[in-house]
Length: 242
Image (cartoon, rainbow, N blue to C red):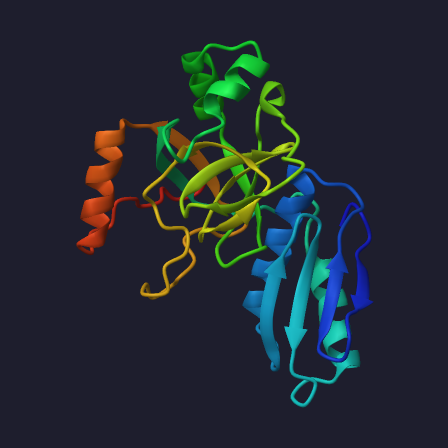
């Protein structure tokens, strides 16, 4: 690999495989490629893999695979992985209702950035966002690719409850709230798409390496999509390989 992997012990049942001390799309692509390569090897005792911005957390059962053996497997898998190896992610087009009760920061942020409301919406929805990792809460997607003009610090005092489906900005990142809860992010839109739904066969909609495009829709269209979803209809499907 272009940057030698550091394999760090995390207690008795996990390793963190660090691929870089930098955060960028190329490094994150290596992380998702490593996860795919390790999944293909499927070593006995592998329990879970959690891709992050620049590392892969690997949980294992030491009763089935001793730590030294798992570490050796991880080293061999890293050494065999090409620096330019990429696993195509899925492309999602996510309907977004800008402004309103959930996107309550839209007007203020547009003024702060010197943009019209429509200019802000156009800038935000023109970007293609990469899912760098899932974390914080079930299915919560950390999205890179936010246009620099929209970078905005989080609130000094978090709001106590932000709705599920809220689309926000925090620093250089964007997000989609997977569940309702407290947050210091600034919110500009809402989507009826459920990033986390325990009733689905796979509760988590997004995976690290996917990409997201926000498609502006009216409040009426958003409500109609939400109603269709409540009836059990799928309202988004991914495109292959982005």
